[in-house]
Amino acid sequence: MGIRVIKTAIAALAAIYTATLLGIPHPLGAGILAILGVEVTRMKGLKSAFVRFIASVLGLFCASLIFTVFGFHIWAVSLFILVTFPVLARFQLKDGIVTSAVIVFHIFDRGEVTVDLIRNEILLLLCGLGWATVINLIYMPKDEERLIEIRAQIERCFGAMFTEMAKTLRNPEHVWAGEEILEAYSAIEEGELRSVMSRENKIWGQQEQYWTTYFEMRRGQLESVQHMLEELAFVFEKLKQGELLAGLLDQLAKDVKSDVYEGSVEAMLEELTVNYRAMPLPTTREEFEVRAALLTLSHELERYLRTAKRLKKKKSHLAKQSDIDSRGSKFVAAREKKQSP
Image: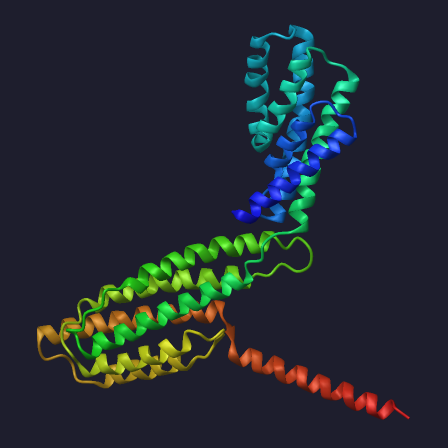
């Protein structure tokens, strides 16, 4: 917020001075337009400037027509609002309603419609929105460092959740407050918002989709974890099956920080499923209920892994690509050595 205030102040100052130097009447109007045009991202700034300029020009000509036909009366301003504002909203130009009103009130204050007046108002728009656009393009705060911090926070929360779940499987009397769930949810919300802002600030070059994909993955995985916790509430007895599953969760707590899909937990889960089927059937109702909860929990864990497998980079693919790049580099080096005198 502090950076945006500074940018707004600079844009307004530059717009007012520019309008004054050009001799445009009502130079403070350029400052108001610049204040309205400063946005939080470069892409929003460009879209905002375009929408506000088009809406203001349309409003300017509509107001000129209405004031010329009906005169400069207060009720004519109301007629302008009744006619123009719904049209602007209909054509997705509602963000330019305020800037349009600023321009129209200048015309009403002058009490006349002339070519010079219309030209001056368009110049005011160019000064105000132009400087706002320039300031928007020159500097936008980078979110990369904060996104990395949020990722570390989410991964720490996920690791803590899996560790606590493993402790509960080994000791059903273990008590956990579960504050990491709320912390992870808040971090994902902030991360998704900042990832959108980061993407909208990159209007040149390749658009980075990593952060959008990452937070999409974590949101889906958090939903799986919540379902796992619901099933964990039914594990009121310590069983061998639970201890085996706890080992998987311990491994998952370590793998959660990896940017690639390791696949080790998936292999362990497949082996565990085979072992489950080879074990004797439950002998009591209590054991049956606990083992049913454990089985459902393992299914949710499988869903969690599917999400990671779909959205994370595969380790085997990266290794293959690295090998290809390495062989390509060696080939180029050998060719250059052969061609050298």
